[in-house]
Image (cartoon, rainbow, N blue to C red):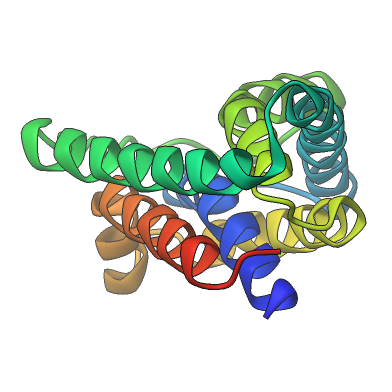
Length: 186
């Protein structure tokens, strides 16, 4: 069960990677393997650091409270994501651009931007006692996969649907993670 929770955690915190890859694909910009690895490394590293921070927080909170608190916050974050998805207006911009490749500087900036989401979620993952090594590994792998998949799907129908409902999907995954964490205490 801990693998499933870590996988759900990694998918929910890295769904933005798919949308970023999709955005670049729609604009006919390629994200090479090296840039993708840089992005995934940065998000995994920030997740690791935030989970270590969460571990420090759990030393201040009694064990019987930390899992429930983290689970409830996951559920509330999921509800927030879903609510913001229902409220915000989607604007589709399609710009024709000549084929370009994401460079090192762009990959570092994207990695840092994408990892902002992972800070709070990483702390919560640690509070709910998710395995740090497993989460960081899966964060790297899912980050690589989702960025690659989004970049190659580009402007297809599936890519537009997932991109359009990113917050809804991510929020649902966070709610599921919170519920499963409450049901299966570690």
